[in-house]
Amino acid sequence: MRDFIAHPEHGIVWISGASSGIGRALALKLAAEGYKVAVTARSHEKLVELQTEARGLSGSIVVLDGDVTDAEDMEHVMASIEYEHGTLAMAILNAGVYLPVHAEDLNRTDFEKSFAVNLSGVVNCLLPAIRHMKAKGQGQIAIVSSVIGYGGLPTGAAYGATKAALINMAESLKFDLDKMGIRIQLVSPGFVDTPATRKNAFPMPALVSGGSRPGDCRWVEIAGLRDHFPEALHHHAEARAPAPLWRIFHAGEPRDRLAGAAAIVWSPSGDTACGGMINDARTRPGAHRYCGRGSRPRNRTDRIPRAA
Image (cartoon, rainbow, N blue to C red; front, side, top):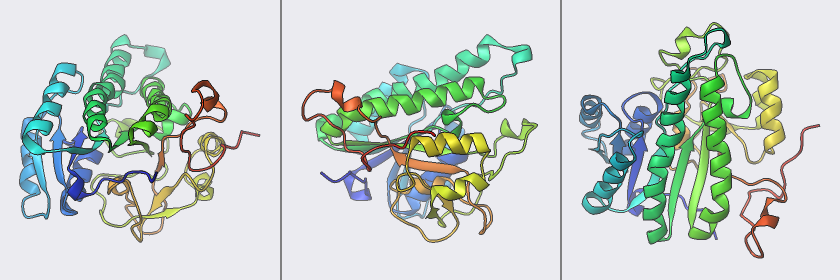
């Protein structure tokens, strides 16, 4: 069975966290490629502005504002998509918040809010999306995690914990979603220009911005990762997946992508690799033994190399 890739004729794309940054830029990119895009965020005004900006594009944007931390709200959004706008072909679960954490001044609220938005918020969207796609027998889900999910970085104790959880959750769900015809993928951007990251007191290599130029995106091998990310982070990524699976993005020629989602990490200049990786969620070597006969998931390669 070939991995499903959502195209405009398959139905609507749902993007959470679409009022700014990566979500906003991706909504415009997909609408320009002819997709009908349902956008969700708490700010109705910002979503209406986004919808207005998309007028004249070959696709369209539908405003379905809501709070991802409210499970009932997300059920209502999914019901609106299903009964008013058509089949859900793809869900890009992007809503997130970055709250810097310093051990000298730990704040429980920073952890609770990070978990509520970044982890529970994804679950609240994921459940109704999977239920809808299961009934249709196909679908594509992209969970926006982060490279920090593969190794801790300064001030990232709360944010990184949620992103690591998303990676584990996607890999675990792959066992069952494969059998349901639902493709699950992870998008792991590096440093993204936001008001919160501008306060970071450490270097942020390959910083990317939603305001960068869309449309240019080609893929380079993981070998280039060492030059653009902290050494420790490179070893984490290298140990987790082989070069044919992982990619970081660079300005240039477009290629087969997450139905356009590769465009979320553009290089602001034409000669430096962007901070980001994308891959199909995969499973750990030997994990299929716990699933029973015939349940081995479809990984892109046979095994993941172990760290030296």
